[in-house]
Image (cartoon, rainbow, N blue to C red; front, top):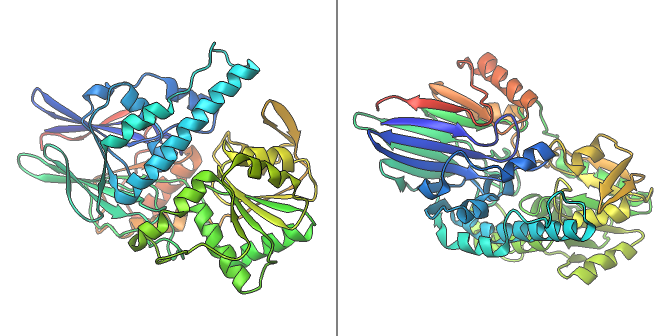
Length: 465
């Protein structure tokens, strides 16, 4: 059997994760895809979502997902629309999250197309969504939820084991066992690795052996750990509210929103921040929060109403969301998306950016080309809903709340390997961060130079196993 891998995303970028493995045994061939994400951020990357895949979705046998974030799962409706009919294997919590996240993604696609048609700014007439709600409904019956730490047959002679990655609810690294005629080989896909000592999620599982390793490098060039994240958040909240305005926190609906609720609940209990109303204005974030009690063994928070506290308000309907514009001071609004690319956060930014007394707090990675990145870089005005909106508010960032392992944590996880994999691929990182991690792997671990693959490149992994 010969095995090759083709990088259809997350190569020299943090988005669009898609890896296709081709298993050839004489004239017989099977194909398996690990992750199936949308490209986000820069327009040149987003345009790849419309490109014809260099493989036939109808001939793809199985998709294996590491987790539910849209840059790892959001292309699934398009894949099914173009003919894929195989199984989609993931953890049980990822299965539950997919329904929420893919339906939300489809809604955003439909709304964006409708808005483009109404405003007439699309080059295509009419503008069409990449996929629709109906397309998502064709995906869901194909999804198979799998337990952690249990081998699952993916295709002939290939099984996978999901290990807890500690990134978000249901996130996994994938151990892939390939049984050849003479020997077995192991491929490991890190997925997105979480933080160590996270108060909500468990530490990433240690893996000690791999023949081939794909490791993410989102923060491969920097460290984000802060000595006391609670104190850092408390200072940011007190400073923002002390300006006499409203604090808007841009938080991913999955993971970051729940982490913010955990910390705000603790800070209020300790009287370290004012007891102002806290509004979660993210329908997806609200639904995701409801999944945590259903999967109590996959986080540290236990059972019951784990996020509730006095003054917390979940905002579901649009009129109430719009009414938040009337708030002048003494309130916290948590909304998505975390990179400010879509969702209700854009509505709040449109209203809040021109207000000098208000504060926008960014608490996650901001990819190149996103509104969040442009805000961090100090652009004086940001385009939203066809308008150029002046940025007069305060823009702050807290790095200690990222759900991604930083440079030292990536090296700590890699340090669990008893010996260097025969081949290591550095993926899911912008060029500088990937290059920095690759160099650190050589300098600190003494491994052979890792490969930094490029978009559409193919590598042969094993010959005649």
